[in-house]
Image 1: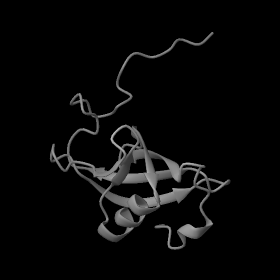
Image 2: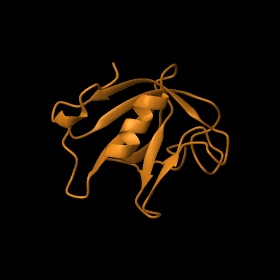
Image 3: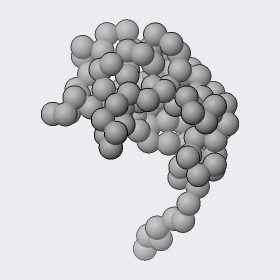
Image 4: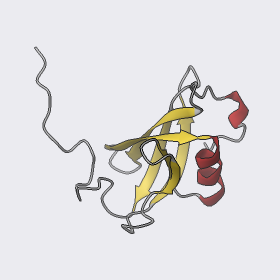
Length: 111
């Protein structure tokens, strides 16, 4: 379900909300990014993933330079309305390293 009333979301003090991106088919978490009000509106309007870069302090359309765009299939809000789960159809790898997922790296051993 696409969020239709984003006024109920709890953006942080910097106007940001975390977005976990998951491949709709495989259910693999492929990336984590931040969204602000404007990037979320653009995502809803275009059906493509649009995020906010904290380091560059600008809106960025995922895949605008790499071609690895993400078609948004659904946006879910967590129970506290302070995090998003975005399911996408990914057109290529999500990670800037060329890996399918930004989490396809070494794991931290627990226990």
